[in-house]
Length: 298
Image (cartoon, rainbow, N blue to C red):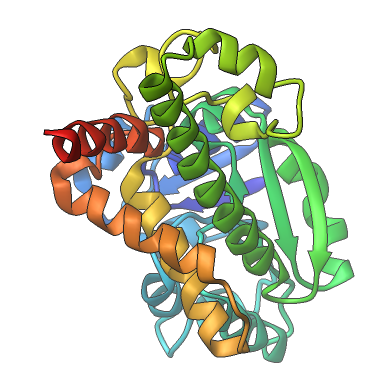
């Protein structure tokens, strides 16, 4: 399949390369000249050159305003490709309202479009093991499923337009809260003189078990592959967690949903980012909390 891949950043680059390795004719494009140079695959000189002849257009962009700007309006992707009718897939993590607005504009133009944000971080993008949470019409999902499975292990059709973003926002709000309380438990264990490995061994098979503990433990040692064992080098940066928690609170306010723990998690990650930790992995909330506990004790 001829694929235009727009957005060659930390996530988009390995996703596009996996498509190319699977035999698809991928033309990458990014507004950043550096991202284009570092891509490692075929690139187009302009966005419209990438779109020309594409059977599928996949985007991975920073935020809702970028997705709206890319797809909508007289010079947007929808207007440019309407006659060719390629499949449109936006893998960005954005607000539900923007996803629905762009999806409605695509439908009005007779185009199949999906919002398909991902979970799994850069490691999952590189390994091709991402989870895709997909929103959009059944017809679009049927066209896209095989393509998405080239880049991911789990592909779930969550519902209509915007449902993929809703699923991503809810999932990451859970993740943010779970990581904070997991880190807090280890801070408390340290204060009580409980060995970290012993806490892990007990909680990982007890009612405290969660992904943030067993797969992504925020303290060095128990889970060798976790960022805690690489000085919290980012698999999923704290700044990105803050972005997703912000989206969850925007959605909660719009829907009238009570999410007090989600709101508190957003405030804590805001403080973590303001402390200069935004580029580190979101599990770096543990050493930050540990430093806080030491300062309060003095």
